Image (cartoon, rainbow, N blue to C red; front, top):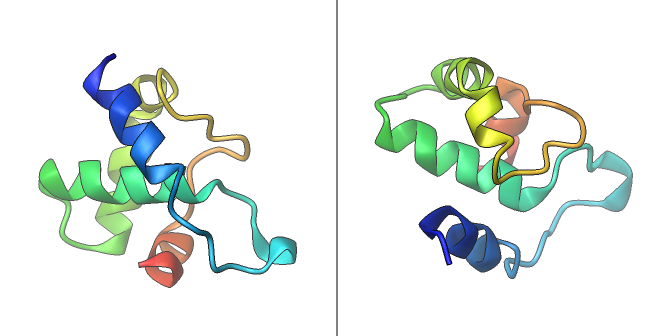
Length: 79
């Protein structure tokens, strides 16, 4: 199993505390974008969003991203 698939599997097990009405993005997508972008040097919510936008094609190889890239505000609320 690829490392990315293992990470997706692990983060899919995290309970999502958000209310159903406010969920546009999958929690594991948000968590993985946050972790990967920080590892790659992002140090703000805006930089995390920008990284994800620039790497969207790559991220879609292992993330679903049903509503596109989460905004910096969404990343901030989750983390």
